Image 1: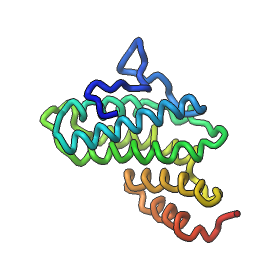
Image 2 (image 1 turned 90 degrees about the horizontal axis):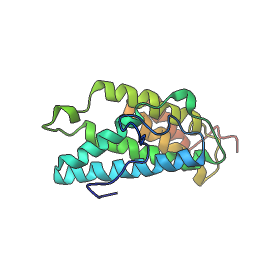
Image 3 (image 1 turned 120 degrees about the vertical axis):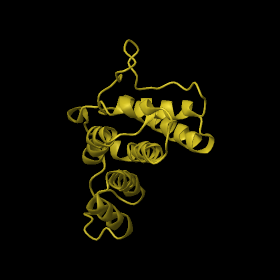
Length: 176
């Protein structure tokens, strides 16, 4: 994930400006999400530490591919609530690092459009489809909550964040 030439999983082989998949609805899609999230996060940390624009370019390419997701193409599948929380945390972490660092290349600037598309096409559908209930038991609830908490922080959604904190710390209305 730290390689300057690291590949991207969600990239269309015939058109590198388009994603390979347009939603998360299976374990295979989840694997693509996990790989790209880990790559984006690692590359964002490396950009922050080294200032090497190659790392920033990779993060922006990954995030801008994922910004093209279609919210209607997300669907719950067995145990997806366990497997989507950490990748969303990593992807939003990468986005936060890039959003709050600077670059000399205008093409690699984080924009308000990036925030809007990433929120609407990745963060919200992942939370709403997989990670928006207080109904998981013990450690499974952590995986659900980390996605909601990270996504809410990224979007500046104080109510969503407060709800995630309540679920994580007390969860007084938990059905189990």
